[in-house]
Length: 370
Image (tube, rainbow, N blue to C red):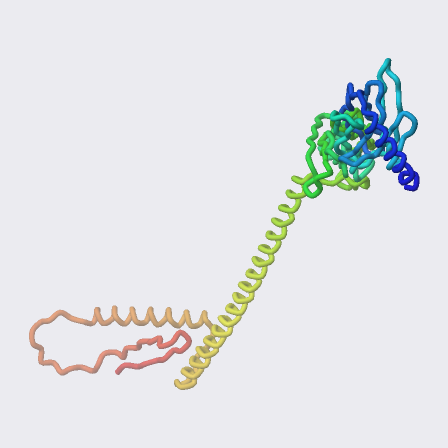
């Protein structure tokens, strides 16, 4: 800064001298547009005819350099100059060191006491970070997988491509901007690997012969349900969705089975209770019938000749039947045909008839008719 202030009086003296003497020089060729990376150098040339006294270089209308045939007045240490001779003309070069993003803009070369100037534009590009977040990969053989490459903090956004150094069955990729960061881009590579190798992500600057790359190793393993991808690869989205749906259906099925089981248990319990109550009612009814039968038996007269022997009862019934049939046949034989009135005294009564009445299968009563 002190050198800059010391140069101001000298510049004023030079300008005053030039104003007094006049000039006949002019700009033959002005600077050209330039695009550079942040942190590099930018150079601009201005060709002037002989007889010049003062050249001024300005950035966005701010004078950064003032050059005379004998000295150079520097306003900013990042801005320096160089001079060359080309035949009868002079070339003045302005050099911007460690270009910053804010240096982008209009560069102007002008001459004292001349109505002509020449200008160009400086474009500054920023090369940001390039990374594959999960690093080296371990993936199943012949199974589709995704690899993501992020370009962060780039101005403008780069073009991203891939170099595939592994045998694959299929591969494709698509670039695009990050949803929440306009200065970042992303590229997703989808491939079906069949062997080990490397994957390289490249980001190319637009308008510059410059690029950045990052490489990761890819290792292929035999697919297994028990294998765990320790390198950070994840299941595809469709697989996660299918797994979620399957678990949901399984949970619903379990709930339905539990409900059906509970209903069956309740129904079985009710059926058991109903059967138990029916048995109780049946037992009570049988007990009541038994008591009624005992009451009826006790209320009648007892037969001392009763025998519980079933064969004997059957034999008695057979004898009674035969006796009854014999009595009927005898009555038919003794009956005579009608021969007119007969004044005979009635004789004694016929033979007594014996009949058996079965009032009860277990009770036999004898009745004598006279």
